[in-house]
Length: 124
Image 1 (cartoon, rainbow, N blue to C red):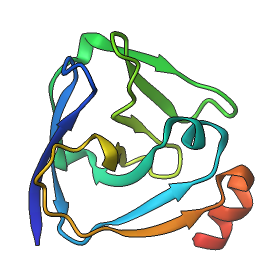
Image 2 (image 1 turned 90 degrees about the vertical axis):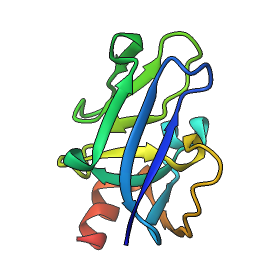
Image 3 (image 1 turned 45 degrees about the vertical axis):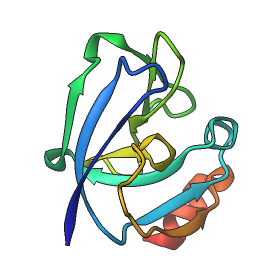
Image 4 (image 1 turned 180 degrees about the vertical axis):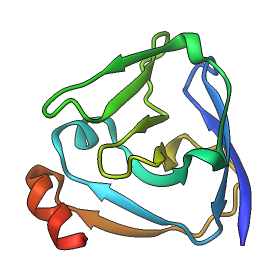
């Protein structure tokens, strides 16, 4: 069953809503950027995600292969969602950036992002 969730960055400049499964699987990645930002991945199909405000408040950052587009609020620095290279048809929403009261029951799976190519091949 899909439920509507809302969330955004720390200062509120960036806000979104999304429709997700109540028992969503989330990835806990150990790559250099996810570890440093505390990102817990919840993949949301592009058509199930709406950026309510803040498009002009986002700063883009790419590194490594340059395929992922990391989007940070240029006021508070929080990355509440971004375009991952692993799921080109989805946004990766940071579970920690959801508003309270969402009622989701996540299943968390570890992902070895330090060895991204090998880990992606194993999970395919």
